[in-house]
Image (cartoon, rainbow, N blue to C red):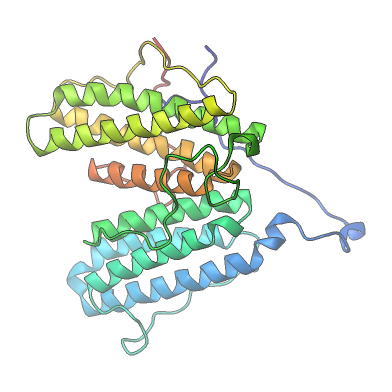
Length: 330
């Protein structure tokens, strides 16, 4: 079996390198049609405004509650990284200055959590209109915002959530809705097969996790995650089969990235599985008409990773993973 890459990795292993694209222009290009990045400009500007408003909320709450400054400062640093990612291709600009108590919307940690959740919804509201490259960024930033909100005590639904993860084979194609199998391009199928392979590995990995969790809430959490990954795996298999494509089969077994011997290492494996899965779904957001379902899956994986104790990067699925032993089927 070839070594896993970012597009074909098994979720138990490390990610491959990121692909980069560059282009050049000269004087003859001045009258050319707008590029995808140019088309994203109004959307990026709108998202930057939402990010600056969220930063102002952080500043106001930190000023009002100095005891929370350390933990809120870490989350605010993530939001600054979101801003940097969203500002790509735009003229340089600095974040809005700290808002005064009379202008910021948030006053308390609870209000800040709600602001994070609402802002994550605004990311998803623009998902359908974004270019493939920006769509992955928006989904990643929305997932991070949802994790921030949960960490601050707000676990409410994201307002502009996508449709259920099980796509209808008869639905019409659209960037934000379900897609008929015929509407998927070769790149869509490739990304979906990679997500399916990652789900196969996650199902296997959670089988190991469950064997080491004690009876009680932890084991119930493990069972719920196991069932969620089985359901998503089955949904992707159905969609591929209906479209006339043979779904990627599960390997008989997978090499774990480290030895699991107790509840602590089982939880660490669960966190690793969910973090690695975010990369597969960031790719699926960027290349497929199953964009909303992929964004929902990315967000769910990010939330579960945080629940299991993962130190999520500011851009789940897009940030480079820490070096880890490569995984392969056994």
